[in-house]
Length: 204
Image 1 (cartoon, rainbow, N blue to C red):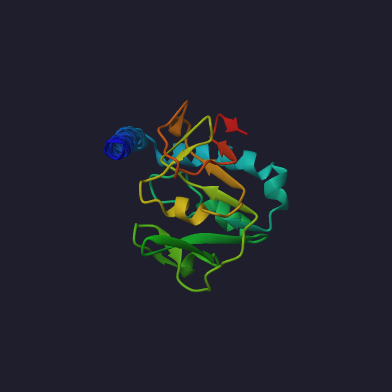
Image 2: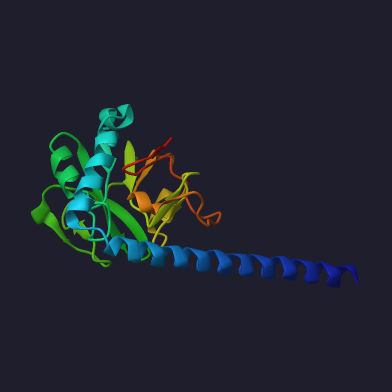
C-alpha cells in the first residue's frame, strides 16, 4: 500500500515538472515571436547606433580592458551588430567565434572576414584554425531576451548553455533595449549572465 502511494507521488512530481516545462517553453516562444516582430521595425542605422552605445560602455569596463582572450559572436541580421567591434579589437586582442558541431558548440580564433564561412544556422564561422579548449577571459553573449536578474533566453537550441556548463567564465549579455525584460521564464538549465548591457541600461 505504502509502495503504491510512493509510486503515485513520484509520478505526480514527474507530471508536474513536465507541465511546468511545457508552460515555460510556451512562454519563451511567445517572447521570441514578440522580439522577432520588434526587430523588423529597426533600421540598419538604428541597429548601428544602439550597438555603438553598448560597446562604448563595454570598452570602458576594466574587465574588458584587461581581457586578452574574448569570445564574441559574428552577428546575423537580427542581432545587435558586432562586425565593426570585432574588426577593431582583433588588432589588439585574441578574439574567438563559435563553431557549431552537431549538438555542441566549440570555438576558434577569428583571423579575417575572408576566413569566415556560413555555418549550420546562417552564422559565419572561422573556416580554419584549431578548436580552442582553454578558458577565455570574457564571453560576450547574444540572446533573444535577457532580464534584470541577468537571466538569458536563447533561440532554444541550447548551444551556449551546454558550452558554459561546468566552466567558470565571465559572461556578458548584450541586446537591444526592447530585449531586456523585468523577468523572463527560465529553467534550471538556463545560464545566468554576470552582466547585461543594452543601450540604455547596464545590469551589474
